[in-house]
Length: 617
Image (cartoon, rainbow, N blue to C red):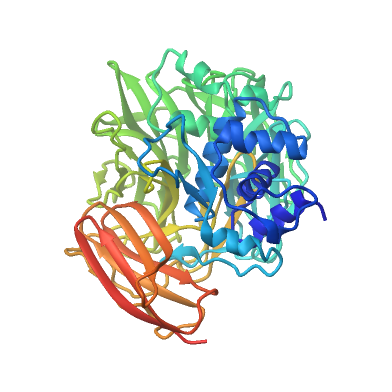
């Protein structure tokens, strides 16, 4: 096995995510350890290196891998920053007082890590954070899928998810299961498919997908241009809109048009159906009352900004364009209530202002009434629990430059005639979706939470919250199965059984599954009633090899949670970053600790508390 492959194996065994197991990451590890192809790992040395003249120069000289100068920033942000977070590398160990992004910035393999890699194939797995107060288990999906945008199930066994692969081009991808997600198989989709945005099942056989196809295949070069094109558009973007459009592949550069697919065998094969007006560039949201009657939301501009609603009465064979207000920029979600009523949600630009909007029809789409929500920047999703109760989620307008806004949740109990905001506003969270188990008060919201680490770098976490009382109270959780991914789709089949999916542009997508509602630990931790800082005793205690550490935050705080030996030596940092008010439960695994007494210490602002725990092998 080559040293490059050995380095990738070490990174995998150390628990780094897929994105940090690639060639550049492996070469960076080799450079930090000073390991040449003919060297043994026991000869690894610790020395401080700058990125360009140290790490990248080593790659070129010792492994003949020469990268363009602008790759420096990729190495810094996508590799070294992640290495520091994993305690695999130290940042500015020779001069910790250097300012961020100093030209003298340097990195070194950490003392803990070098001790591990010197025994390269007797690696003791480092402790890691799995799921904060959540029981979401990762299911394996085909490697040829980098992003799953949508998921739906016809019944507990038959389901499908869709998105794309973007290794070199955008290619539509779908997967299906007939055993409740135990196995996911790549489905057949048209070669021209670009991005499969929304999937909905009618029954165990029939389902539909709305998205886009490539008139000409895109290249990844065009993926790096979208922000410039978006900003040239005449209508301002809502918060998160640029990222969303880039995420679904709508970059304003490539040649694409709307796509509608159908399956008649439970999602195993998908075929184009009907004729989409050429003026439709992307089909985005979809809702069907039955196999014949359905709505889709779409965009009639290649760079986004002209929202449309289309209606079909023959299962997608033909489409009628409905009239909606010209001020509406984007509609990401639509929900059928009955043969006459439907609700769509998104945002508009009117009077030089962006604001969230909800459109409602009560006459089968002939007329749409617009309700404006000035406090809301945009709505991202809508879901109805029954004919009268529904929820719309999104993000509030920003409270100032550089201040991330909170997530917004609105509720209706009169079929969408009127809406009121919930008191719960998850801090710095861009909510992507809302799902309820039909006919119950149990639901989830999911998306991305924005925070910073101990070095001041921005980062995003997988966010999840659950309610069992129709949104009156919520339990927040951070899912850290893979911190480099984002959540985009969800499905709650029953109050206990659910799925979340997502991914990123360059690595394998993710599929998460829960059979207990996604929440474990102590009940009753309503995020609205937290009054004091508190660190709770870990449970179980003694433990082997994992335990849950719980604490409460009454306000947003910079938090560190660390583990120490009885001699006061810092052993591990479980978490370091900014968290919003909530109850947090971290499931911590410590396979490398010997039997004995240890201490865990929480610092949140000026609050500090330490408790004892026991490892019993």
